[in-house]
Structure formats: structure tokens, C-alpha cells
Amino acid sequence: DLEAMRQVLVEETGDPGAVLEEWDYRFADARLRARSGADPGAFRDYLPFDACLDAVAALGESVFGVRLQPRPERSAWHPDVQAFDLVDRDSGTLIAALFLDPYARQDKGSNAWADVLDPGDDGTFGEPRPRVMVLVTNAPAPVDGVSTISLFELETLFHEYGHVLDFALDGSRWWPIRDDWERYDWVEGPSQFLGHWAKRPEVLRTIGRHVETGDPIPEPMLASLAELEGLNTAFQVLRWVSMARLDGLLHGPDPITVEEADAQAWAVR
Image (cartoon, rainbow, N blue to C red; front, side, top):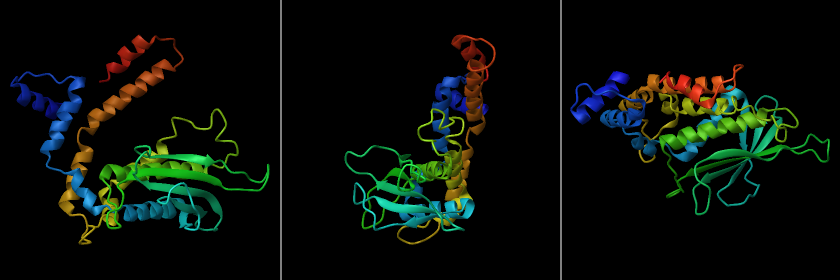
């Protein structure tokens, strides 16, 4: 990884002795990605939002035993919003309720997120009610009834559904209001898993169909995506190890200044 990126600097500067510094990473990485010939934008025509949502639901049911059951009779804050129940696949028991707000519109918050609207009640303080959650994305508004999304938006949809499953399946009674309700070493675990899962070629083969022809994603496109996903990952891991080292030093048993911890962690890079 390092030598390939250094060669980019050699070509850009004409200096055969060019040294790759940590701050050159994003520039060199972007150059190598552009040269690969892979076009992540080309996947959009193969990723209709409804099919991607079906894939999320299928994953939740087959792997985690949680069925996503539509509840079209429920209304919400906007006509685009879709209502669902999360139901135990085997017993039929209601786990939680979910509102999905899928499409971009004026004055709506950007990107995507999942959150809890109502922590629910087991009946201790009144009428029993389920936990209610929200999943918000910003897929393009449908054109002729079809919304297509990018690879990033596909990853984000799966990622946020990981949070939905995490929050829904947490059985502890007071988790939304405890000071320690969410362990931050854990909070992105389920969502990162699902997000990366979505971009696996073997998963994309089951999702992707061209919106006009119905053809599957061409194998050369899937191969190019695998190449991009693997590009400079070793260097990225060094960055993460450095961050983890900084965290471990700052919160470890031995007194240390921020400057000293940063210097030791930076050495990893």
C-alpha cells in the first residue's frame, strides 16, 4: 500500500526519492481509486430502494429471526413515512414498532439515522405499549414510482437497520434513560457489520437488478468493487490502531499527558 501511494507522489512531483507522509494519504488514495477504472456511481441503476429494503428485511429475518411486517394503516408525520412491526419470526411476538422515513425532501435532515421515539412500557406504569423506533434515510424521491440509491446509501440503509435491531432487541427496561444505556465501544458494532455486509459481492448479486432491463449486476462491476474495497486497507488499519493506541493510553492505568499519548500513538502511523 505504502509503496503504491509513494509512486503516485513520484509521478506527481517528478522526484524519485519522494517520501510518503501520513498527510499525503487521501490525495494518493484518491488518485489510485480514479485509476482503477471502477465506477461506484454505475451501481445506482441496479439498486432500486424497494429491493434494497426487501434485502434488509430478508437479512433481519433469516439471520436474526426478526420479521419486518408492514402496517399500512398507521399514519405518521409525512405521507412518505412507512410503518412496520418488528415481529419474532418463530413465535409471532411483537418486538417493537418502526417508522421508516425513506426519501429526501425540503427541510428534512440530511444523511441517515435511527433513534427511539418511545421506549415502551411492559405495563408497570399503565397500558402496555411496544418500543417505537424511527429509521430515517435520504434516498432520492421516486421518479415514475422508482427510487434508486448509491452504494453509499445502500451501506447506510443496512448500517442504520443494524441500530434498529440493536435497539429493538435490547431487553433491559431502563436502557433509554440510564447514564450507561449505550456502551460506545459497542454502539457501532451491529451497524458496521450490516453496512459492510451490504457491499459484499455475494450479497449484491442477490439485490442488484437493473431498474429497466432487470439484468443482474455485471460480474466485472462486482470485481471492480472488490478491488476498491480492498485498496489501501492495510494503511487504514494502521490509522485505526493509532487511534485505539491513543484511547488506550489516555484511559489506561498510567498517568500521561495528551501530548505524550499523541506522540506515542502517532508513531504507529
